[in-house]
Amino acid sequence: MKGKLIFFGAVIAAVVVGSIVYHRSRRNEELNRQSKIKDLAEVPVTLARVELRSFSAAIPFTGNLLAVNRAELRAEVSGRLTRVAVFEGDNVGRGAVLSVQDEEDLLLAVQAAEAQLSSAQAQAEQAGRDYERAVQLLEKRSITKQAAQQAETYHTAAQAGVRAADSNLGIARSRLHKAQIRSPFEGQVARCFVKAGEMLAPGQAAFNVVDNRTMEIEADLPTENLSIVSPGLRARFKVSEFGDYFEGRVAQVAPAVMQDGRTLRVRIEVPNADGLLKSGLFAEGEIISDQSLEKPALPSNILTVVGRNADVFVAENNIARQRRVAVGNDQGGWRPIEREGLKPGEMVVAEGRELVSEGARLSVVNAPETSQEQVM
Image (cartoon, rainbow, N blue to C red; front, top):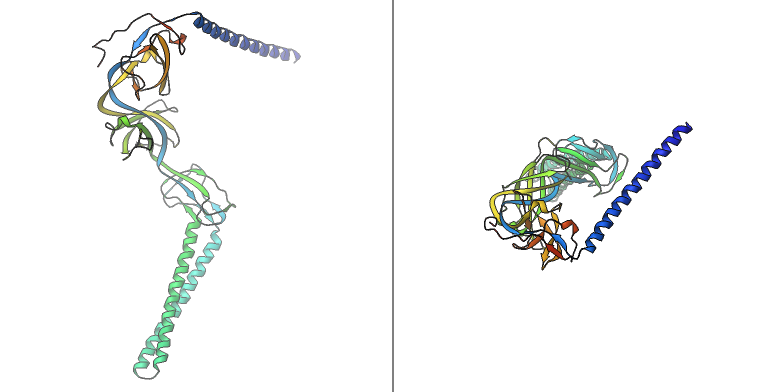
């Protein structure tokens, strides 16, 4: 046993020492690289020219998937929760009872109101008969006019009593209905916030219900796409949890731009009959149009893209100036520069960019020429 402990201890020590040596080696490589850059009066680089190229109007977007039908259900009345009928993940139909508060007391209140209504109706029927008899007797002058008016008053009061009892029954039934939290549509219970025995207050969240059969993505696009985006356009996107593309359609384009004046919101509807997609997943894709746009562009192989952004070094009088730009998807080995990040004709560091930093002096190895065949 002691020998095994010594062996395992030696292995752990070797791993720790190896890790330290590895990290020191990487650190020394970085220090050597930085030292090399400092020693160079000018960094040798090649340049690539920003060219104006024609791209299919594929508008990039990002957003979260949400169920079109989704609801957060809250308690409408106060009371103790006597029954929770569902669990998270359960399928529910339209109108299905999810939970009930103080059901027994509320049922008794309904029964009492029904009894009061029956009594009031019986009294009203009797008062109606008495009034009819009083009218007949008054015609025969068998009773006074005052007695007939009194019978009419009793009849009117009895009818009012029926209406009041009917209203009280409606209130009791409404309280019973409100104490039963029901699903507003067919779907699934996404979240359950309550347990039997809890006291609920009006407005307290109880359930989240979603119908994932139809999803939507709300995406904010630059207003420069205003002329080419319209309802019905096809959209395709990916989510990190799956490798394949999913498709949808632009269902709605906002009638006005956002308050910043530069953003247009669109809603993309996504069919999801198999329920594979779930609410909350992050989606990244593009809206596809038959139109084409001319945009400044750079070769994809000289860009290191993180998300939708890339850091480039623009050569200004042989001085490197760092600039972050938004880029579109690759089309034929080129990526469009979005939102006027670069202008056609500007020179960007290609080879040697890993040795370049802001303000570095550049020694240009090549000198790109403008080619009429390349510029479209």
